[in-house]
Length: 442
Image (tube, one colour):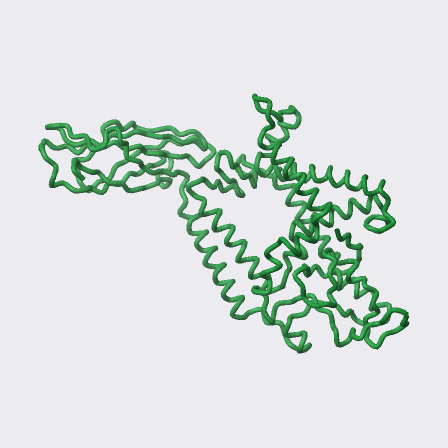
């Protein structure tokens, strides 16, 4: 396990500010409510996702799919423009690693992570890591169980089902806790080097104009050797770039999967080179600038244009679906129990189940209208209105009649019909869907 040495500098300051912002978001979002709902709440048992005031129902999971695809394309675009900015500055693995290291240094002092670290320090550090793993996991659970419900369950010791088994959220809390603790206590840098797919396909996302952390071999080599006071190159072999690296790689070996482009080796080299009145050997450069130091970075190029255009199309599609979205969802299902019932001298009956859902946080009164291309079709059991509870769902059974005294309907074909579910108080809030009326023999 790699315990990176703390370092001060420009990039360390930027990382710290970003960490404050992202952790604030992580801890504050469960407390923010929009329209009475938690700002980010993934209600998996009820299959509803609440995202900043937008409630995504099971029938609307395309919203979630679009959000995930947009996030992926945005990551591609940022990588092409700025390199592995996500890994070094915003990835949860990076952020939580720094928090666990901070806790370790507060408990173990200068001995933390060194060979001189005692068993007592290791035990105390691991206990502290386990406790903060519980804390972080508990907050993570609130995004799926809800902050209010989680808090009530904690103060009421509501951890068990009626049969004595643990509730599902307790099982997940334990799983998240042990996963977080195991990751930070043992796995750490191996997550970036061995597991994370992003580091492995980054070469497909980078091009000659994407910045990477680069070691200047021309100036640095040949570096100072053991026993020498000064080398022919500028590199002093202080190895501080290795000591401060979160994944423990040597940037002097070139671009590697383990390099998360955090810039801490740049800060370390800057401090060392300032002692010799020289500029840093490690810095952010594009691959083109490595061979030509006067080359300019081009932000607008085919790769970024493709990513940017694709992202724009996705945002446009998402916005369109959001604009046409109604607070009602509805669809029809044929009622097989009275399917194509022929009544002599009366006509043909078809049964339908109209499924109506209320996506709002207040009750709605709706009416159902039928639009068919044949006037004889009418609804026999239509109510003036139907009231649906907030976030509720109603299954309405309707019987449609095709009025006719004909004895045979062999010459009849399917008649397209159209149902409209309309909010009585807001006629613009409606859902229109199609079905068909069939006859015996069809």
